[in-house]
Length: 142
Image (cartoon, rainbow, N blue to C red; front, side, top):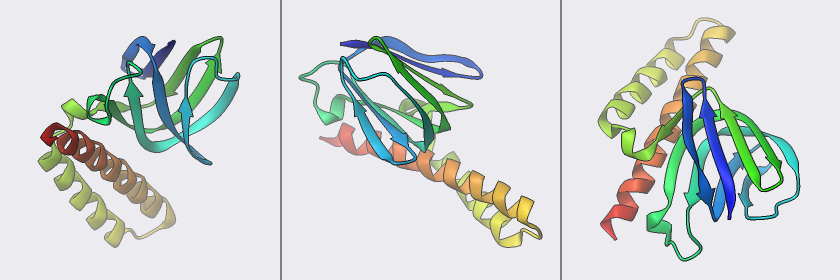
């Protein structure tokens, strides 16, 4: 077991001892277990999956949608600092789908590179929120 902390601008989203965490990075997903080597890395937009106990099934994982940030691993403490992180239980799929539709419309109507990049960031953010909500919903059915 090791301590996992997920901290956003609005405060701590998660702070507890866990068995495993899967984090999105520039090089793909990485799995973190106890005694992981020290590391500082970039977290990308994606899903964070947390397994509290070794025997927990995939259905018992907790999920967060995040827009990226910084990962720091040192002495069995994993800290992820992000601008935003949404727990799967707090994501309303219908609202996220509407926001994704608006973001796609903004992207289609973008008149300059800055507007296009902003719209793409919104598309990515809402897409991952929908993915995380879907993961939680699928696992609850089993």
